[in-house]
Amino acid sequence: MDKIINYYKRNKVTFILLAIMIVYFIFISVNGGTTKVEPLVKYGALYPPYILKYHQYYRFITAIFIHIGPVHILLNGYALYILGPQMERLMGPKRYLFFFLLSGLGGNMATFFFNFVSVSAGASGSLFGIFGALLYIIHRHRDLISPPARKSILQLLIVNLLFTLALPGISTTAHLGGLLIGYILSYRFIG
Image (tube, rainbow, N blue to C red; front, side, top):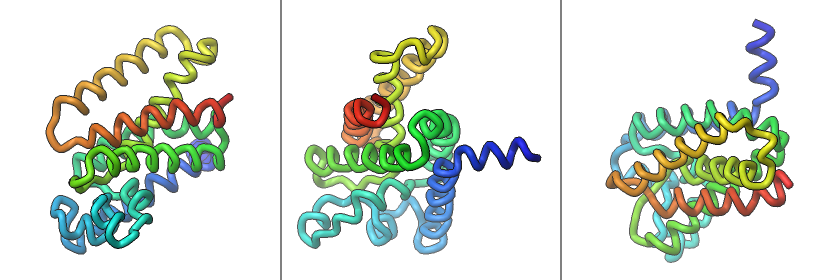
């Protein structure tokens, strides 16, 4: 039991982020549903026309924590559970929190500028930011990741990029924006 408690204490930001996502998902589920546009927009999904017309800039952040349907939150929640603790330990809790939010913000801003009429939500921009950080580490600090782990990371990234490009309804701009911002931020957050 002590190992489990210590694991959660060492990775508290990851689990707080995960808890926010789950609680928000439940809240939206009981208040209209997570697959309907109206409740998604009402509770803060990214909808660029509202940002521009009504100055609802909070949507750049709230959209990170909203997920569209159970499969979306399961996939993103699992990815955060697997990838988040490694980044949190590497960066430290505060830097990791800012990194996560800034990567998500970058992905959402890419959607704002390049996919203006869409309604989008999810932590994918932040998660692709973590992939960007992993690419940065592979590029700049190869000794931190073993060759088999590097290969696995690259394969996982390629599979995710293929899904991003092939499946309808996925915000390509958020994924690619998060990946790029995550890589760039790593110069400051990882060094």
